[in-house]
Image 1 (cartoon, rainbow, N blue to C red):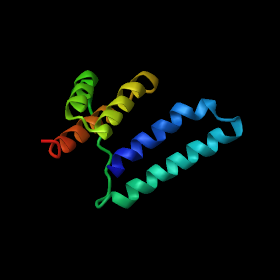
Image 2 (cartoon, rainbow, N blue to C red; image 1 turned 60 degrees about the horizontal axis):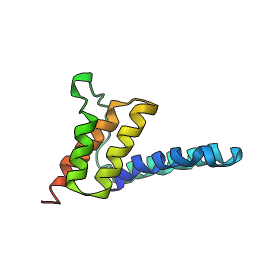
Image 3 (spheres, rainbow, N blue to C red; image 1 turned 30 degrees about the horizontal axis):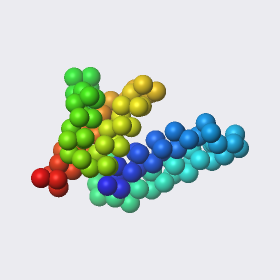
Length: 111
């Protein structure tokens, strides 16, 4: 769960940043980035090696979202929502891959 929050937390800041006073926008971004990095550092047991997702490996976002809803876990749903929303803002196949991985992991606890 904490690793999911390392993605959804900064995504939440992105939702509200335009409504903040100009002087608070960059500091809010920096705090979200630092908290996310701290969470990754805290919960990572092995060094993270970048593993870019090739275009053929990108999961279908509609399927990822439908699976998250079927699982019924709010963390899975939120991460899938972030993947869908950010696909329109700044496409990054890693978000869809992370949402699919979260679905696979969380589904084991919901059976």
